[in-house]
Image (cartoon, rainbow, N blue to C red; front, side, top):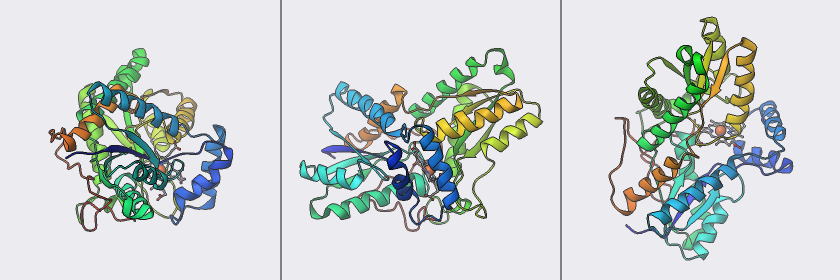
Length: 342
Ligand SMILES: CC1=C(CCC(=O)O)c2cc3nc(cc4[nH]c(cc5[nH]c(cc1n2)c(C)c5CCC(=O)O)c(CCC(=O)O)c4C)C(CCC(=O)O)=C3C
Ligand SMILES: [Fe+2]
């Protein structure tokens, strides 16, 4: 099939202190996140001048992607749109229509299934097309990529590098993978009707594949950045509590791999590089944080491979038995009842 463009679709983040509140309101509209939690998260953004690193990081990934497309002689303009902040997907899809784009692929910056990582991007696509109306291009989302060999290898090399940074302590260090927590109910409903837990299972599978490549047998998968009301159960344990537990077991050092995130988002630079690292220091544990995969050159190559699955009928490279879903047309759900909002 032929496509006129690629829409790079992401989360979005504030560009200055005055953007922080309206951004957070966009993220949490109708989600029942308590105001105290919003105040706390606003503080995290303000700590960095109200600027999230996510937009610049996405620009970097898109620059690498454009070079890779050029190098392979593929003519595919790349457009940028976000769910929660400018450039908003509605405006981008409108600009695409004005430029005469009739059919485009969509790369969403999440490796995972589930409501937040996949289904909500389908909703964004459907909403943007509805806003633009008749002239909106057909939009075909690329699939989930949690077990793509290039994603796994980029993460594995990052873990190796973090381990080597620990020097002699590398031998005794515990490897800990972390991803964004979600409500337990959201995870239970992740996947087609009745399948369940595709988010946490995909995270566990990606962690297993990375650990296997690094040659580490004992590791943990934990969660971070919990939000929502305290009485609602979310995936646990939290990374910070987990450090206490490791310390109690006499573990002297940790390597933390933020496998759940494509790049060094605010959750990574705050919740890990500040909160978790401070906790480790307090416990006298050595702490090394592995890099995220987004800025590794293999990440842009992976996006081009995902594109080629549609444009050239290229094989879908997947390392695990778990399905990589998420590729649908015009924001349709993958299946009836797939990843419903908890
Ligand atoms: C699974 C998942 C991913 C990974 C998949 C993917 O990448 O899509 C992810 C990514 C991200 N989450 C981000 C930011 C935020 N997430 C929030 C809130 C929430 N996230 C959730 C889940 C996820 N989130 C959930 C279930 C909520 C509760 C509210 C709701 O049910 O929707 C809130 C509200 C405040 C708070 O409560 O923390 C903020 C500000 C940013 C941008 C960071 C930056 O600016 O650099 C990124 C990349
Ligand atoms: Fe989030």
